[in-house]
Image (tube, rainbow, N blue to C red; front, side, top):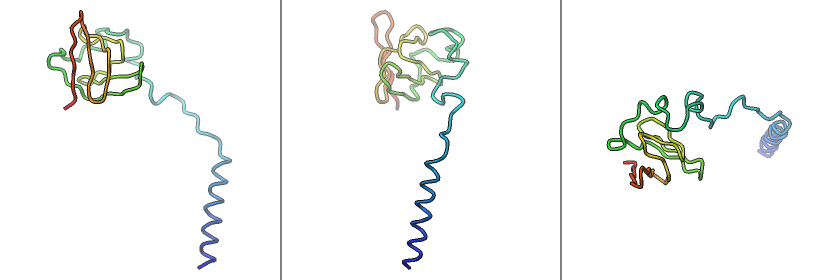
Length: 112
């Protein structure tokens, strides 16, 4: 029994030491970067926003709360803080909600 524990301990310590000597994995791209099709589009441009419905019937699908880098997924379209969707600018993202403004009017979308 003691021999098995010693063998297991030697294996675990050897695997841990070997792992520490490996080169770190370097990613070829940022996995959190926006897709190229959206990254090059100007905020509020028709090309990246054409598929979005009006905010009156829009569905909030997801939110990412990350300060000034926060985003909301509205009808499959990702909108970053400060960007516009159908004339409404995204001004606040919270847990399960996104706040848009246009000409002083606020529109809040909630996730069901």
